[in-house]
Amino acid sequence: MDEPDSDLDLLESYPTLSSPLKYLILLVGFLVIPVGLGVYFYGGGKERLAKLKSKNKGYEKVESERV
Image 1 (cartoon, rainbow, N blue to C red):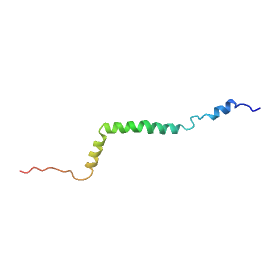
Image 2: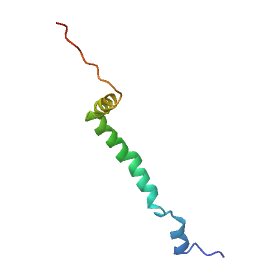
Image 3: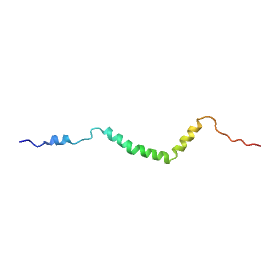
Image 4: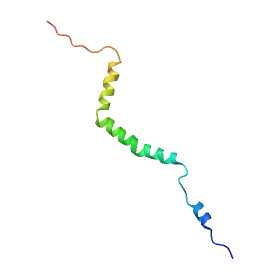
């Protein structure tokens, strides 16, 4: 007659938190990045970035008045 699984075998058959790094990566991927992108675009970060890029491209267009 076979013995039923002992408590230790039963415990080992369930997955545990073997790598907390996996959960940290999931948290960053599904929470931190989307929230950060939302705040960035909602807060006008796209416009600020474009302004910074255009400032570094060289000369600014200056409108001159004719007299």
